[in-house]
Image (cartoon, rainbow, N blue to C red; front, side, top):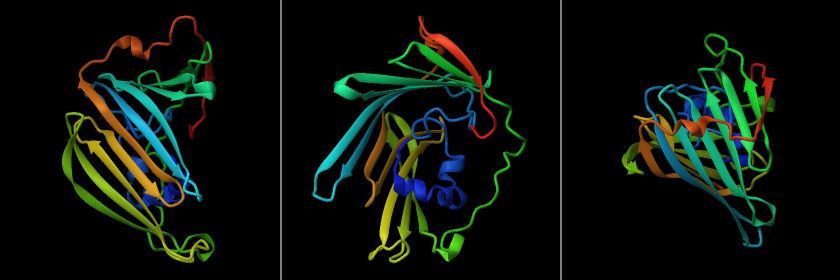
Length: 246
């Protein structure tokens, strides 16, 4: 998932006015190890992606972070995602999350441990209980001016051999709203596969958080290897119960 303080600050607004966070497809760009989310069945695949974040400091120095992601989904909607990043000393570390909507579990394990944690999730309440948010341009708590959000539908294109539909979102914080002498403009593009219902490419750029990109590089449709969803041998599985809101 592309992360950043600027996007976190307006995430509630994007949920209510654009729907990218609340109703967006599961898969790349959909968040690591969340709850059940929206389950997609009958559209199995195996894919790989790269994630890059570039932060620019005030003195012009840039800091780049990158990781690779492997993800798969079977016909019943189970997903597995493994993120590989560089840890201290340049050592590669992996973190795997398996989401199982059939068993209502989320299982996680990392390469630096021999313990896997399985969360037993409760059945979500009917209707989800999500309320309506305020629209862009309105005033938030304390009379603060909410950022202006505009969206543009982009021309479909092929990503990793799959047709993707794109939406560009621009968030503008007016001058003076947060002590800023000029407007703060952040942009985000999300490209999704209408067939597989996953995010294939997501980019964001803001003056506060720099540039972030998540892109699927290879994708194969069809039933994935079932062993990808299994905890590796030698791991101890610890079971926990999560309450609503996980």
